Image (cartoon, rainbow, N blue to C red; front, side, top):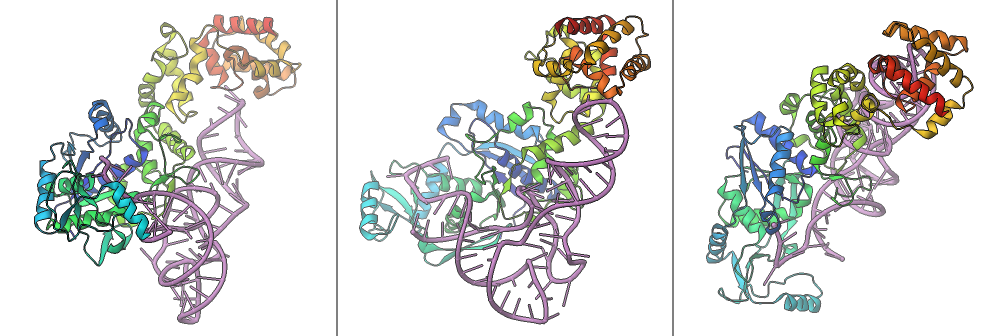
Length: 469
RNA sequence: GCCCCCAUCGUCUAGUGGCCUAGGACACCACCCUUUCAAGGUGGCGGCACGGGUUCGAAUCCCGUUGGGGGUGCCA
């Protein structure tokens, strides 16, 4: 095993968004680098598509920064890109050929398939192993897989043994001379003196190939760690098509980075003690790859939401208000921008804070305060108004609120007294008022809302409801 | 087809041969609190896939079965 200084490489491929599974793997790497004083090396895979869309790469960097992995941290190195200039990769292939670890083959894919069909065995059969071919047009360079077994020592799974007879002589250089990904990857890892490769479980079957390449190149392979994948409710690997997997989307919906980080870390691993909600510093202290579970974990958005709600409630009111800014002052907010009143919002904020589990829910709790004609939930309105006491209560409240002192206790007592007159508790009495004023059957506490709305506006809405009913 | 990995409440997990009558968290249910909804409090429901071993003793070790997942390109 490797005794190099700790250098963990993280190599996502840019696909236009940053996958939550990748985020968790990055966090694993990051926690280790932080505790052991190592380096997190970000090396982004370089594909044609990504090359034409530099914003994809930037998206990865931004998403990493959001979950606390900042490019200017001393433990961070990169971003690098898989060397574009393939010279080093080709040179390594050349060495492999000269050392007898690789050979050229002139079979076309069709010919290979025919031979496979004839023999009944899948894949390439090593036809050109001993034909002594040199490089030439139409020829690929293949790795000469040695006989025996390859044992991958995996920090998560222990020793995994592969019988080399099941690994075909794979291609290193295409017939056009360009290097294949595995080769490029290994050469880059060697060049960067990578000590640990922590990645998703799906890469485990390809690991023996990489390990053989390291060894054939005269190098000591890195420490491997294959962590379980994240799955959806159907127990399938999270995919962009079916599942909500973009870290960016969670960020935009108002999940807090700390909540996301914490939740992600509980997938496949758990901090000590009875609470799963722990600061990242604790995670850094406790996280070990050896403790990571072996089986896939379901990414449960409901549980993420519960974590997020806890993190939101743990915020100070000031922090909460600040974090809400993008959700109450942006262009796609449901009220006219000029009608937003930061003072009113601040007053309501603590009440909203303990009710939401995502920041993007905030607007729906306060919109009626900034909307002149708040939309009314028809079904709820009809239902509430069908209660015989609703109309009389509305009538009496309008009358009483015309003159009452506009202050919390007075508003509450007045309302309560009217309700009592109808044999109702405050909880029932407030229903018609609430729907009249906010358009909804549920929402933030009513009296507080009325205070903020003011006498004129409250009365106006109450009268409008009376007319409507 | 071949290869590899995996298997504790619905879900995420604790558990590394006796501390397990299997612990916690999310979800769910009930009750309490209550100005709706939340939040908070209390309690409840619910699990070691199956079959063989090994052992005085197995969720924990071994074998098998079943079930799931992943990998298998001149893709990255």
